[in-house]
Image 1 (cartoon, rainbow, N blue to C red):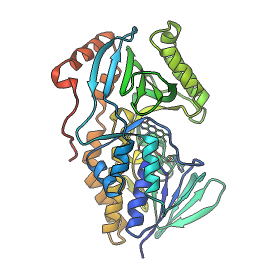
Image 2 (image 1 turned 120 degrees about the vertical axis):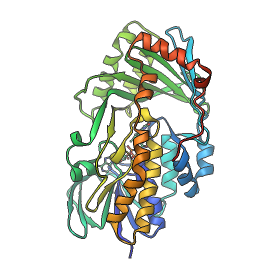
Image 3 (image 1 turned 45 degrees about the vertical axis):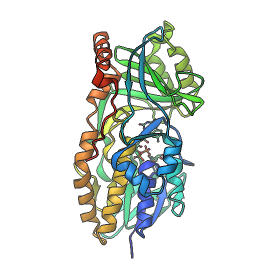
Image 4 (image 1 turned 90 degrees about the horizontal axis):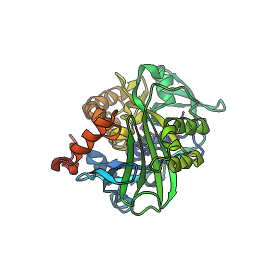
Length: 378
Ligand SMILES: Cc1cc2nc3c(=O)[nH]c(=O)nc-3n(C[C@H](O)[C@H](O)[C@H](O)COP(=O)(O)OP(=O)(O)OC[C@H]3O[C@@H](n4cnc5c(N)ncnc54)[C@H](O)[C@@H]3O)c2cc1C
């Protein structure tokens, strides 16, 4: 008989793992802390092996139909004149709004029980099982537990120790918010830089609504991760000088962020663990190897990693230790490549005005005008 598996987190990694594990005959349950699927977020990229996994789930056509048609990034000055632009489309890649991807993945796990409003609060490992305690005190036993609960994973904290051991702050914060209709140019991300900060508008051609996004350099900040109003104030403070001078559209975008009850704010941080599993507990997606939104690879790693783990578990004939070891050994080199984000950060958020001019000059070079390239999926 196949093992019973609890997946913690019903997002990109968790839903993908659930599909492939259920297909191989495992008994799968998902526990999600939120009361429903979380549909927020901007466009995310699916490419290379992640695109193949999606195709294997029978979702390729639906993903293509829902794909955004964004061409690339345009950098503008305070008068909205374009100073540089980069075509970010990549051969073989599809960009899709995160919420659309979550909805499609959920449709492909229809047979799997998802229990909403169920955060995990404790894990106790025994020789042949894991006892999981949920909010409210109820507990259940499973053969294996998969932590797919994102960059601030509770499973990681409970099974691997405090976040300080695994999470590396990369010197920036970011925020995404709904920005209302008719802002920005359809099919482009339009961005405005000041030294150490960037504010932009993301507008897919098919979507009437646009998204505001903010990235800024900062020392580590202390704040309550559940307090959206406090986070909106942090973003406003970081861009206060631009808002006060009514530079570009900064004030308008900050107002949008303050009005969005689902503002998504976080540190640009990465997760690096020596081991992605301990005993009967294993991590996938951002919980195990978050590369940060600056990588453009979060969804790709989540999908490819979830599938790799499911494949190894199906092949291991009950030997979860061997499956976990092969999962990490196979995927880790790919993860490390995707975690190299220094150049992306320098491109998006130059530290100085001279750096910004240099960036604009570089993007005018013919080979960089388009980033389109054959995709490195190895
Ligand atoms: C609302 C939202 C918006 C996002 N927007 C963007 C974006 O615009 N661009 C981008 O690049 N990336 C975005 N991300 C991150 C992106 O989804 C991930 O980088 C990537 O896709 C990997 O996905 P994941 O499934 O590993 O983690 P995530 O997508 O972060 O999902 C983790 C899931 O676990 C759940 N969870 C957390 N803690 C617990 C717990 N204790 N018990 C049970 N469930 C728990 C969360 O509610 C969530 O559903 C967003 C994530 C979220 C949650």
